[in-house]
Length: 480
Image (cartoon, rainbow, N blue to C red; front, side, top):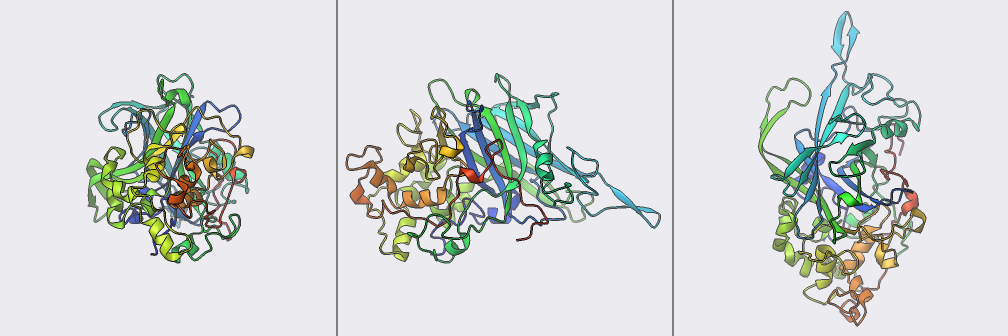
């Protein structure tokens, strides 16, 4: 019963990944850019390394240099990746020393002074990454190493985390430093360059984690805004953000694209019993093994049974038929009804409404023409952009067709929306004539019209309106 609701979008959602935080994908965002003048681009943001306390020193938070981080795009609708962006990371020290008693002794810190420049001389640990673009199959397809449009370099610097105001000169110094790590990236065959930023951000996901963990110890019909505390408000996360021209993602005749993000590690790992040097505690090799997967929010948390959570994280969308019973006969609504008898669960089985929203997309909104049912985030790239002031956090359900589940923006309230959909909101919205073609009717979902909520709400006004959209991470000297 403790696992009834979504305790976080995809934070520590499966037994294995809960102990592998560097590889733990938390959220995926995909939307048409609403920064003025960038409407011809799609922004993709894959977040990793959950529950970061700002005071994360002395090592702070880095990607796994033995890991492979990927954002996959299906621009055909056949449940297979046709375009993949792969990120590999590397970190090492500059072996900075201080002279102590006549001896040069290496310092124990990640920096030795104030920082303001890319690869600053006072930064003791440098973290860099490369980007490969793979067409068709992620392992066997055509691979291209992407380059910096300014100079052609193939290695990019990741900014160190927000250590604190003194390290970066002022309260605003970190964002100025981080912005120097937004790169223009050339994509072969693409007329315009993409943008890339990889680095720490303030955790954008919002939810009443504590109350939800306690057997949903809140009023699900209570105030939608400011009714409860956002327990992730004082946390940071690490983002891989890309802004890619729509023309380089969508194919002719199919404007809908699907996306999901994964992390993989080598199958073999040997622990070094006597490591010497930085990041030398293990030796890894062999084929890649996928250990994290995120597409639509909350799927592994509230849909997949606990015994299959690790299996889901290792799977591909093309194999999602093995999880179909979790979608057609979901346990979440039944458990909600047990806790709140006045909110009866939907009675239409199989739950074709959930198959539609999670596995196919809504016809006429974000469903590919020849869709093969599979779980991923889907976006219709022809849907007009909603500027920040016009965005509704309840997305399509509130008439904002540029919002969730047609892609996902930072301000979209996916917790409330996912809970409502699980309890039959689509059955209510579709009407007796089933205008949405989801295979149910209002009488199938007695609680389908209820404004179910966790009492936490943000809007687009709470986030940046320029790439990478997510806010400056909380500094290490942050006082809760």
